[in-house]
Length: 205
Image 1 (cartoon, rainbow, N blue to C red):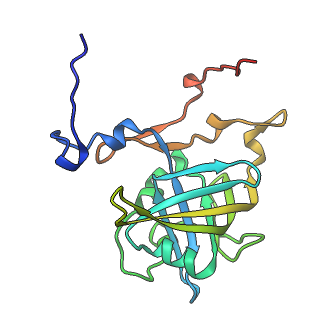
Image 2 (cartoon, one colour):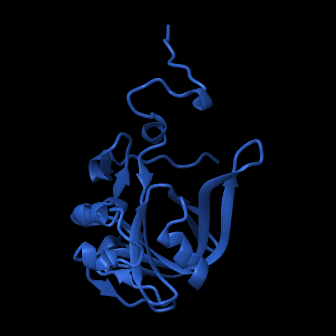
């Protein structure tokens, strides 16, 4: 017989750490670069991130609180998603630090920037994949009682994409070759997507 740990989130989970992030995991990391309307660079990781549509490609990240990434995306209508990899994990983590508004996280983490083609926002030079995005929607989340929550979903259409050719074999992008990292649960857990974990299943029909 299964013994269930049951809880209602509004009343608390009753555990040492909220299990939600560990259950919905591992999650891709939205390593989001933006530019303020005065030209200050910003770079921050968001684990509430994903791809939501193919054509046109729509990606989105969720800002908990009115952070610089949200303000910049709203002001300029642009952002860049940079693939976070094992080689840059420590630098990515450094960009998650709480710093005063206007601080340049590229400089803080010692990261080199590359210019984009279609947007003004810089790309992370060492990242093997970047999506240049035009903001399509910014949606404030609401609770079931209709009250506004301090969370904003920022959606953007990827209008230009850069991929390191070393990650493509016979016309197919090789996911594990980039060594992408993913956010797990707990205060410090991350995972790396490895070739050893690959298995294939074709859709029926």
